[in-house]
Image (cartoon, rainbow, N blue to C red):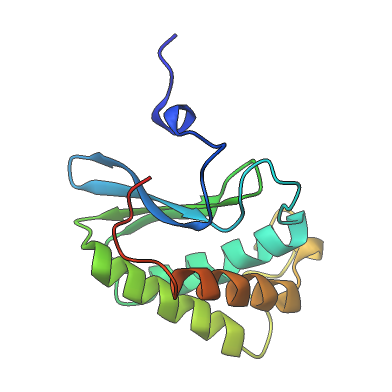
Length: 149
């Protein structure tokens, strides 16, 4: 078996940040790393699930709506993947930071929080989403923009 691209990244040196994981034609996969891998500090299911609901909705309804293909969590609980068609890295970073700020300021029910809309709606928690987004926004405010591993 060939090793998939995400397994070729050296997770022993990877720090929180935003990275271009791969480019397939006009589709860019971003590694939105919120935690240092294998450091014992992982997102809990509720935080991860809640951020997914908020950011997937905001990104698919915002400036990059037509370009956003996918936003979802990594199984290792250390970040998310964002797939964007025709991506401009600076623009994606700007839009992502705005979606994080919008989540932090959000009041009301998490998007898609009913039994009809979600397969595990009982695990959604807006405060956990806000805390996670605040934490990650602080990381993104400190990146240099290279987005390379």
